[in-house]
Image 1 (cartoon, one colour):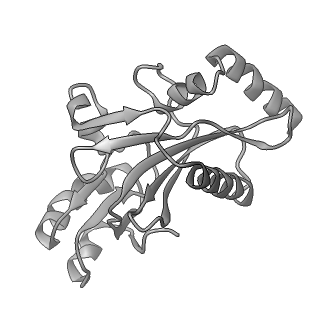
Image 2 (cartoon, rainbow, N blue to C red):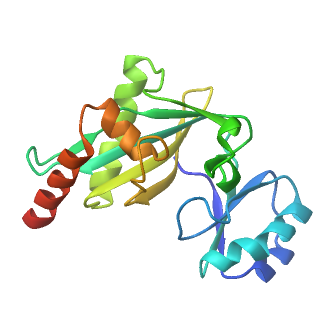
Amino acid sequence: NTAEQIVVNSASELESLDINYPKVIKPATQGCSYGVFFVRDRSELLERAPFTEQFSDRMVVEDYIPGRELTVGIFEDPRSGQPHVLPIIENVLEREILDFEAKTQGGEHLYTVITPAKLDSPTRERLEEMCSDVFQQLNCRGYVRMDLRLTSQGDVYFLENNTSPGLLSVEESDFPKMLQAGGISLSEFVDLMVEASLSN
């Protein structure tokens, strides 16, 4: 499952659209949640859109999916030949989405990171299998981080597939946190990525 979405080339295209709210608006490409906003109505959408369009040649306007915010790290394991799924993280939010304000310094009070996420075994295994399958279907290389929503009914929605997500530090970035939880050091991970690159 993915959120229903509309892709536009400019903010001006949004003025004529008749859509239901709330929505999430974001650049089609970019990282660190630059230009990503939760919008409650048309006026908020039109107010935010000019800022969002600075970061990409296209903008995505998609349905807001309520639920638990999960993120899953996966990397190409050259030794097993299979995607390696790391322990899943849950971001418990004080607002609707994990936006730039929450991610940057000073926004720590807006969400709590739980590593690993508290999931029952069948749910965790289902998520790992789904993400591994998506990794292979998209022909991913190296490492990615997939952002998901798990609804109260147990439905899973894929929000994003983040290619080469940040590795700033264990304190700041999700992927190093997942590596640590999975018992893999950052230096060992770099070695694995070099091996994977040489084998492709």
